[in-house]
Length: 202
Ligand code: HEM
Image (cartoon, rainbow, N blue to C red; front, side):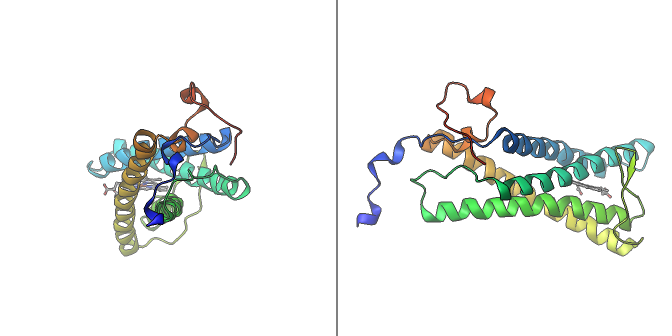
């Protein structure tokens, strides 16, 4: 019975302790690159072979490899900096779901670029980052493997799409329903103006 009684303060906003500028920048750089690489990938996949298609492939690959590099920095930052506390009124299952979602998102932002890089290697289209830095091919030329990895790349992107939808919905629920600081903590300072903000963490 007691367990079902909500604490009196459950609807009050928790004190805001935003992420550091670095963590916020890394989050939004990765998000922006994914929001660009995803539709570009869908668009270019449907084009017939032409110099334009190959140019778009290159842009897509440069963005994807950049996601991979920024993700390495982001994980290193995450391991060395504590993120803000979750609101005290979150149930145990919500905390577990939030943690699981974050692990899955981290895993997929590595898995997608790596699958793309290996796919490009297998199809014999070497990736030259921003046209200047040739990346080593991770596997030899292999058409069957290339076709298989295209399906893996597509499948992972469908999972990413679903995770991002849930991630955004959860962030909006925190902001619009719970009225806590979870979403605000990840917004750049400029967009957070007017809301209370405490010391920065992770
Ligand atoms: C987070 C980064 C990435 C995202 C979100 C992403 C997303 C996508 C999406 C949505 C597609 C279209 C799939 C379809 O409609 O069938 C695609 C295709 C493709 N991606 Fe990526 N990708 C990323 C990274 C990479 C990287 C790093 C490479 C290579 C170095 C790469 C190489 C390709 C290629 C070659 C295709 C087209 C395959 C084809 O049409 O034959 N991607 N990607």
